[in-house]
Amino acid sequence: MVNIINCFMKIETKNLTKNYIIPKSPDVKILKGIDLLIKSGEKVALMGPSGAGKSTLVHVLGLMDKPTSGQVLIDDVDITSFSKAKLAKIRHESIGFVFQFHYLLADFSVLENVLIPVWNNKKKKKEYALEMLKIMGLENRINHMPNELSGGEQQRVALARALINNPKILFADEPTGNLDRQTGEKIENLMFEICSRLKTTLLVVTHSQDLANLADRQIKIIDGQIK
Ligand SMILES: Nc1ncnc2c1ncn2[C@@H]1O[C@H](COP(=O)(O)OP(=O)(O)OP(=O)(O)O)[C@@H](O)[C@H]1O
Ligand SMILES: [Mg+2]
Image 1: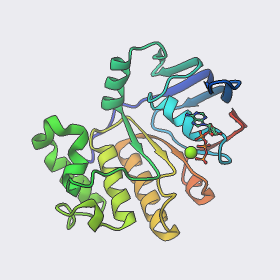
Image 2: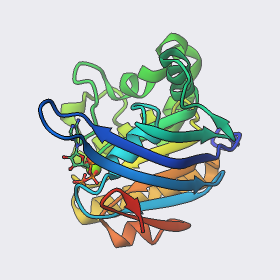
Image 3: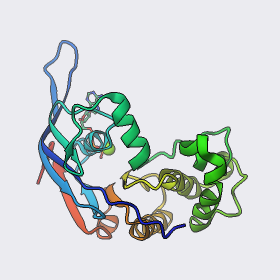
Image 4: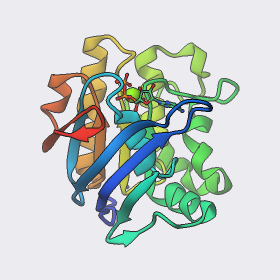
């Protein structure tokens, strides 16, 4: 199963901007003309100071938010004007997310949490979920509830959940920002290893130079621009 090779996915932006509209105030300009190309299968680290626009960029690239202007191209197709439903379909089929906080559902077991994105197909996907949890070293925790897990274990469940649908691209926004250094490093290594194995394109936002060093390439964003 873990030998499944994803169809690669390339993601590109052209002169991308994002402004937030604040009532009775001038628009806040966050992204100021981002030109970015993440090649298929590439692992990229996105760095930069707090407030620079990293999470905003990830939300736009992950099709959770619309840009103010400019284009997002997926495999050379401009998806900027796609309907919400079409974007949701691409997101569901091709994109995985891991955030700083795990967002596991408290009333569902570890295994059920991993199966949430494929709930309609959960019987078929169960074996894959179990295998993914084994890779994460959680085979003895499948029936536990999230509050019975350590922070690192919770984040590994979130990683398994993000990968259950074989996304072509994984966005990880400070995925280990809440963890101690040693636990964080283990999970970071695991994430890179599994993305290499599955040929999943990876964009990871981080403040850690050690984590960024694992990537094929590092990008820095400062005040809404790539430097
Ligand atoms: N919904 C919003 N409305 C207005 N401003 C926003 C909104 N969301 C984010 N911002 C502003 O956009 C800027 C960039 O935020 P963003 O979350 O992208 O930063 P970041 O680079 O991810 O920072 P950090 O490293 O702290 O996570 C910040 O100044 C923030 O206050
Ligand atoms: Mg952020």
